[in-house]
Amino acid sequence: MPLTIIRDDITKVRCDAIVNAANSSLLGGGGVDGAIHKAAGSGLLEECRGLGGCETGMAKITGAYALPCKYVIHTVGPVWHGGENGEREQLASCYRQSLALAKAHDCRSVAFPLISAGVFGYPKDQALRVAVDTISAYLLENEELSVYLVVFSPSSYLLSKKLFADVRAYIDDHYVDTHYDACAERMRRAQMAQAGIFPSPAFSQPVEADMAVHAVAPGASPSLKRMLEHLDESFSQMLLRKIDERGMTDAQCYKKANIDRKLFSKIRGDIHYRPSKPTAIAFAIALELSLPETRELLEKAGYALSPASKSDVIVEYFIRRGNYNIFEINETLFVFDQPLLGA
Image (cartoon, rainbow, N blue to C red; front, side, top):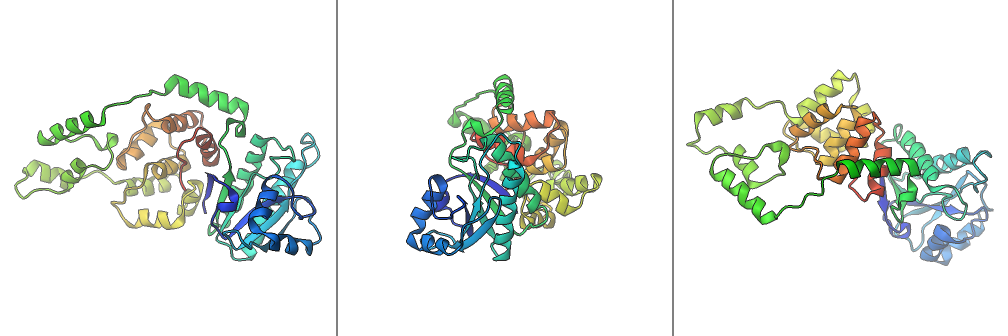
């Protein structure tokens, strides 16, 4: 775990296995198939000749030759015929069969293209939905595998037209395109620090002023010392409390947040652990927190939702609508060229 959507050329992705959206002959073709065969070299074609082709929805594995991975998993997606001829199940089977082969060959990482979304004509928004749903369901039971969904361009057609239009309208209504002079901001913060007034953690990133709060000078006032001795609960403490209140297990929470188990262990083991903002938001999504609760959790990590952040506005859009599917949120963030949550 987890699932990450990336923009890249799949022939250049370094992982244990990449998946080839092949045709039934397995002897190369256009698009991703042709690019993989070209990058791998003639050895791949020679091995594929001995495989006897592949049926739609199934997968076969070969060596990777000149590619920067160990294996190539070849799967044959369905040709789109309107969606009433079993295309969705066949496409989902491509992902399940490929993931099973990756696991059988002890792969820890695998990269997929968007299968059938090219010359096979599968609508890209629907192809993406099948990919995300199938992969995320698999990862709930197989958390040791990291999966990359490689999309060459985050063009808006990956989302349904309605969702894209709704999010775009929400951004237009709520996004504040704020720009400020960085030098002036530093001077303002320096003046506040000299006066003993520090910015609220909810509106600041890690800066020298924040460090100064934690490093109490020998001559500091007793009131400041007393304040530091009675700090409110930390992000880690609030997160664990919220998990218990929701009746969730730790594993249910970090999987739903698209967070790696090792990272969660660090957060649980260190009361003062300060996660990145995307990680903090991912946990809010996993816990299905309301907007006020999300803001409260973020504040514990030193962050805030801002109308000057397009990614924050998108997250707010989903929370207001009660949609806590982190993979759908990440699809939308990807299309709008924003950082993803969790992974």
